[in-house]
Amino acid sequence: MKQMRTRTGFRTIVYLFTLIVLVYVFVFMGTPYIVYQPGSASEVAPMIKVENGDDDEKGTFMMTTVSASYANVALLVASAFNSNAEVVPKETRLGEKSEEEYAAVQVFNMDSSQSYAVQAAYHAADIPYKNEPDYLFVYSVPAEGNRVQFQPGDIILSVAGSKMADSNALTSLLSTKNIGDKVSVTLLRSGKKLTEEVQLIEVKDSEDAAGRPGLGVIIAAIQKVEAQEAGKEVTFVDTNVGGPSAGLMFTMEIYSQLTPGDLTKGYRIAGTGAIDPEGIVGPIGGVKHKIVAADGEKAEIFFVPAKNYEEAKAKADKIGTAMKLVPVSTLTEALDYLKSLPVKP
Image 1: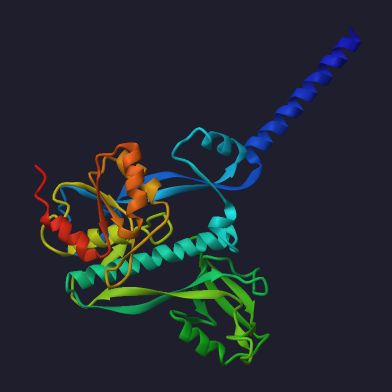
Image 2 (image 1 turned 135 degrees about the horizontal axis):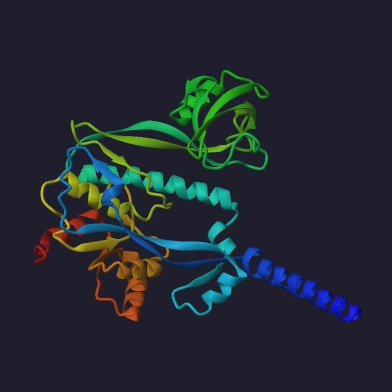
């Protein structure tokens, strides 16, 4: 009897151990893959505030996203049975960047796309504007840089007590310092302000250039767009997404509010596409997943960059959507299409 109890107890331990190992392997153990799936199709109007804007819209503009998940074994197995899932190696997404650096790049690209969207909308609406330096963004931190004090995605608020809005101001300030000096740097990280004592390191603009003192980070400057016509300022609420692909839809919503009338004409309008200040629409990735997301939210019209049209149409045909796909290369083409539409009954 005692021997049987011992065997039963041993089997229980083995079963529990096996279960723990299986749970770890399927749920917690990472893999070198990423799974892309359809994300969301979200209204952009709540994300944008236009001073004195005409926001009486019967329809809606929607930005579309792709869901990207670093895959565990369970997700890989589930993806095998999901016709809308796409499994790719991590390096195709990250390249030589870390996950943190990639996330920071996406935040920077979104901030830039918002700035470009405002400029493109002002340009199309004939509203004069100017660009002003806003803040410095930490793009990445090299291996030889100050990785203890900085993280990708940090916003540099001030250095040695002076506000830093552009890289020229930073270069000018650091030119008065020496390599090895310490400076106080105030940062904004994940919405929280903190101050770090940073030792300046040697940086070179090229292999043959003389060394100069630097913070040991790679930075990018974010600009603020200001209307030079009173009562036309545009601000963004937190969009909680990354990348540049919402640029076109942001621009159309801003333009609609800056100008009289309802540009949506009562339709549910989704789309994707990068934008530049002149209104040129650039191609993006993941368009087939965005088609599925927009169809799921009953979009009637989908604006797609001309260079992504064939991929988008193939997916639209495959899922049998009734959405009208409209390929565009410029903001003007998108606006002209909407202006020519009859108002939806």
